[in-house]
Length: 286
Image (tube, rainbow, N blue to C red; front, side):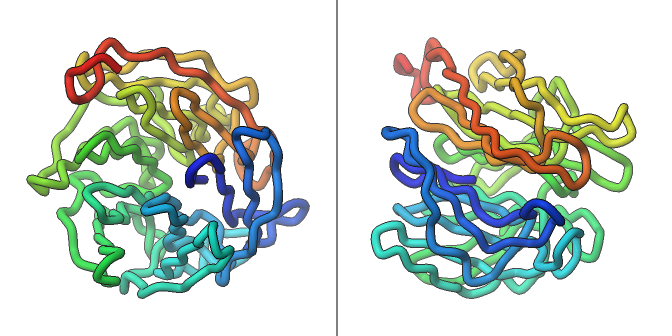
């Protein structure tokens, strides 16, 4: 999920009841509180990476097969809400799913994910103006089913998984210096979750445990870059993995996903208002 203007867009995924990979796009208008159906994607995908930039919705990579994690694609699909038209842009050259996509410094960063069942530390950068991809500095820790959020020129990359299980790893990329740094670990190791920036903080929500009781994750946590620490927020009423997470003003929205590990479905939309931080990233009152 990503927000464009005052609307949330939930794209692709597995459709009930049998887990068919879908091209469906749902639009939630925040001011009116109403749902509608948007034009479908050219390429149906599950586990795509999604971001908003320049008034457009971008969907990168994912898996094209139904009911499983296979058929990776490197496709970049763009939706224009004003015209209602989708465009398929240049592919990145590396097929992968379960990556994360972040907009910073006028560019889109496709980070991590999996190719051929192997977690990647790969970073590729798309310039919307030039319409082409370039290489970016790789992460220190390869991972898939990860999440990211952006504050200023910093991309915070959170959690994810490898063959050994869930991670609590947090790295931040400064897109100006092109250098990665390690940050304090998540309180809850998680994968298959979402994150968003709100009020000068990074909020992580949802996910699923792997071999730790096999359950979905209710705890929500926020990272304060000034204090350099994580703290717990109220848990989600409906724990889910594979959900969409996006923010609007000082509210975090969590949409759909699976309430149980594996193939499960929910149409829940839940919101949490985040109190203002004492200082914004610029040092001024938030």
